Image (cartoon, rainbow, N blue to C red; front, side, top):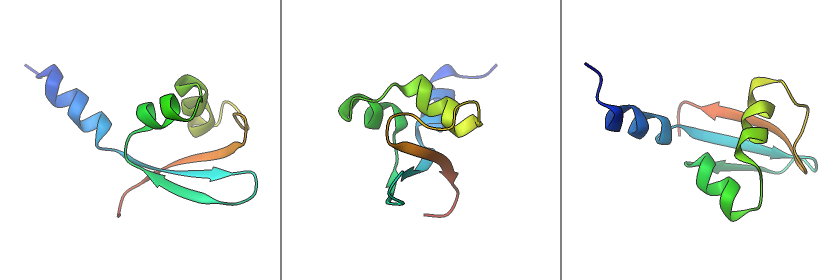
Length: 68
């Protein structure tokens, strides 16, 4: 049986690279907190990451980073 706490922890440990329209890049370790603190919609950022949206406000790319 899978422990739901372990699943949540693994999801939040994912590191993301955010790219803005002016080609600035930032590295974040919590997409939900980033979205909340910077007035973005997390679901829209996820859709940018999946390629279902081209951008959300000034964010044009959301990528998962493996080696930080």
